[in-house]
Image (cartoon, rainbow, N blue to C red; front, side):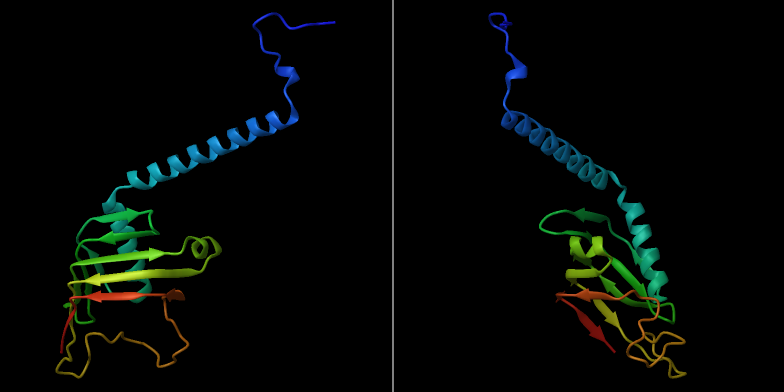
Length: 173
C-alpha cells in the first residue's frame, strides 16, 4: 500500500464534487476577468472618437449634419448607453435647427445583440428648436427628396423608443 507522506495533501483522493467546484471557480474567474477587460476597454476609448463616429452615423442616416460639441461619456449602469454635452443639428438651410444642452441615451443590450435597436430611454435637456420657413416656402426641417410614404424610414434604420424625456425645451417658429 502506498500512503501519502505526513503533512502532504493527497490531491488524487479529491472527490468528483471538489473537482467540479474547482472548474466552476475557474470559469467564474475567467468571466470576471473578461468583463473587467471589456469595461476597461470601453472606458479607455477616447470620447472625441466616439463623438465623431456617432455624429457621422447620425448624419449619414438622417441627411442632417450633427455636431457633438461636448464630451461623450459611456455608461454601463443602470443600462448601457451614453450621455453627451452640447449637441447641434443643422437644418436644410445650414442654420442650427436644434441645439441641446445635453443628450442621454440608453439601449437594450439583448436587442443590440439580436440586431434590434431598442432605445429604452432618451433625454434631451435645455434644447432650442428653431423652425423656419424661407421666402421660397421651404421649411428648414424638411429633407429634400423625402417621400410621403409613412412606411418608408429613409436612411434611418428601424428602432424602438420606449421613453423620450424632454426637459426645458423651447420651440420657436
